[in-house]
Length: 245
Image (cartoon, rainbow, N blue to C red; front, top):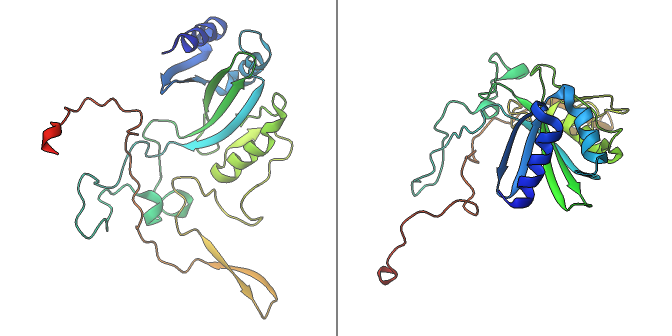
């Protein structure tokens, strides 16, 4: 960890103590986790207090940790025909089996499914910080809105609500942002079927767009693969002899 991140983490621990559930540093970035009940107090302090001065919230995103880290394809080798089938039975949305869309129940293999992740920037100190908050209830995920702290988070929270179904308590206008008015479900959830639930077409007789049950069949064409980013991996493999080409 760099000296700057070391110092920032030390100040964070001094200020918030055990309200920081966990902290980690990877690829030169610092991430801390807060409880939802402590979020507003912590975020206000991060914005206002001199040791931090995170004036800007640059992004907020939702995360669905269901089946976290579980791949469904063998990628070390491929036949000359390429990939054609998934090899694990955990490809939820591809088979259209889970959640409200079927009979099975999708659960997080980490014990907690939905989280909101906040990306903060301190212009004063030239620091960046990531804050993660897990929702306590997977069936009704709720976290407090930080719109009174950073007004620019308005559309970010609406996007996370639209795509993940995370409720931001206290948001003044929590409506869908990217999907249609009559859209059902939240398309970035792991159990949302890749083929969707409905399709639309223009009906000439009615003179308007109509919704109909989806007619296409689910097909697995694009692999969902978990792999390490080689840009950040330590290259501890033995170097090949240059004379061997």
